[in-house]
Length: 231
Length: 231
DNA sequence: TTTTTGCTGATTGTCAACAATAATCAGATC
DNA sequence: GATCTGATTATTGTTGACAATCAGCAAAAA
Image (cartoon, rainbow over all chains, first blue to last red; front, side, top):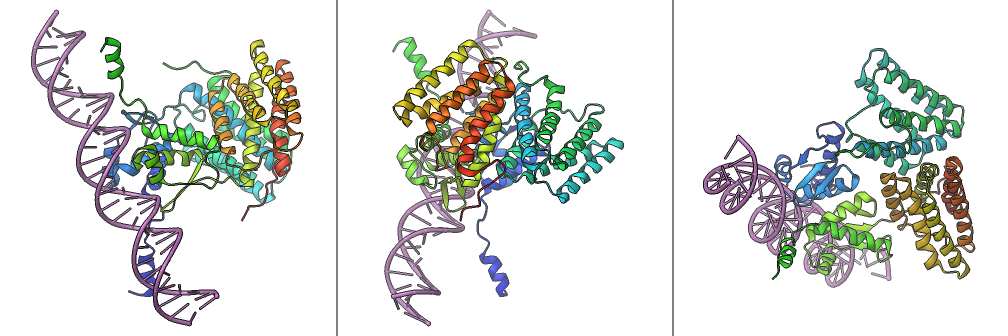
């Protein structure tokens, strides 16, 4: 055993808890559709599957509860949360103003390099539109939005938007599925980028807000209007 | 034992977990200043004090971690989170647009009764200003804002604003402490209510946003400007 | 005196066992 | 067959024990 080997072995301490690793894995599974709204998380089964005890599973689930990804019902179990239409409608409204804020902060300070990067996403999305490839469009759409928020420099806004996005996975209906929706969406991306590149905070802000609200309106109607509670 | 007594005894089942009760108690302690930023939560001491085992304490802390109220450092413990200036500045920006959204939704639909209720808070705050009583001003200030968001009808916006408010307790500096600040704040409350009562969504929205951002600017400067990271 | 090393105790992370609760199943009754 | 009742099983909530890690302190070395 060399000195480097000894160093590696000595450093094999707990740098992340099982709880954290499990929480992240469950988040990933929600994002990737391996867990769907309404699914039940069985502590015993998960513990057996991951080769750990139930304690860290429970701890991870209490974290996910506060993230809004699961619903914990006492004595009955943990369920992947089902986002009702009303909740989704409310979330869209919040997302709209948060993205608008990102645009408002970014527009005065956006760099030529950032503009070029965002343009690349738009170009990829355009080819996805032309080949009708939602699997190509979707990740680039997401990255386009994420980059705008990241460029704004408000880190909390970034994490908030990502959490809201993760939560939107719990809602069943999607607007990009609608016919022609990808093209409309990408046209809107172009308008957003044009306003950002022109360093116009107010119009960049309102283009971004409108972009999100267009989706909301397609599903639920105008701001302030909430679908009835589902049974 | 009468039939009512038997019913009560039979219903003495677990309707809320210790985990939930503990989490709420810790949240209350943060809100009431009984726990301050940087304080360490000792699992054993808390468990002894509350007469429970460490398991539910740990679970509660994992929830609070995701709420942003505590920082969990592996193998070292749980600390009430310290909100740095930069983080607070970012939070103010987000709060501003969320309150603005509430105003925009509420202005077209606000009722005379709601207006009267909000006016009552303003009146109480005015007497608090005149007797220089921050302890009277502060809760009414909070309720004024909470009511606006609640009246908007967007429940998620309501819970989001409350969570952000709770998180602001982790930041040490306050603007209402500044001389003359209460009077300025209440003047702004009046302007907000006037715009809401006039059913003007755009100006109600911008009065609310400005109200929050005035505090931010007093502490950190204009939107998009972030204080340097503290050591 | 200052710095380094080693030990001890405190605390955290995980595990397995027990108690409580809800869901499911089987049998009885209508 | 449909409904009700009681028993059983599965699962969740909590507890206490053990292992791992870190912080603090005392002693040794420079």
